[in-house]
Length: 370
Image (cartoon, rainbow, N blue to C red; front, side, top):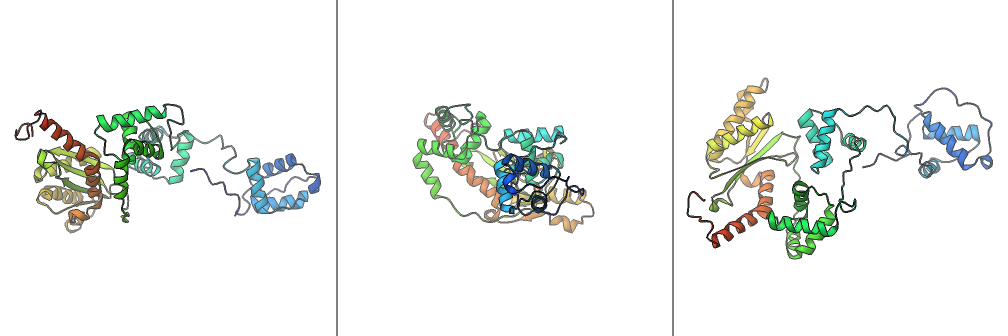
């Protein structure tokens, strides 16, 4: 988003208190456009604001105009705040901030995700506009289009998407998911509209089916990153010997961990998953949300004990509140992940297994292979 270009609604004078140097008043007919531009530019450089500039123009130069006219002239002459040269004494960004933003930009993160990463990695809280300003200083464009920049042709983009659908089992991916695949696996950045158009050409029937399944989003509010983790198991691949247990940050929807094993019903396994995740991320959430199944017993105990031990002045009774049980269908964030997994990943995996079973390359009755 560009900086605010509004030139109306000025505050009071924040410039010098010294009077403007005396100049022979000129009538409006005697002022050329070049002179008018130089006068306004000079007043702006001295720190004068809109209403005060109008007063000076009228009293010193006999030139009476409105705020709207001043705004239009500044726009035509390139004298708006967003057009003026930035100050030269702006300090460089600290190396950790530069590295974090460049990494996030290369991964296709949005500004909100960049803010979250700065908070998580550097404990730095900045506003949305500040992150955008940092990106401009680093000359990083938020919306990249490799086709428009001449890095590849549209035909090459079609070939990459076709390869992703066939080789990466992404034949059921929608345009949002496919755009992420292109960034992660191919290092390509394409606008959503372009990916949508290409997928509509390659799989028009599939795109229409996905559009029909659209639903209205429900409002879900979370205080911030790592405030709530949602955890749950995924059993749809269990008939094929694959069980999944996952953790997701409810605020950013970032997938914190996916654990694949032969079982996700053993509380010891799930407890170890939680401890491994806490160790790798350097902490635990303020609240853990999961369904009240037998497999969550050890994990709930660890969450309550660690909260009581490491949060100052937290009583055992209060620590209990840091573990939240809910029905599986109400665990929105993790259920959303499983829904995406069903539509984007499960079907290709199942089709691949069935294909190998037909070729007798995979025996689902063999415990070792399963």
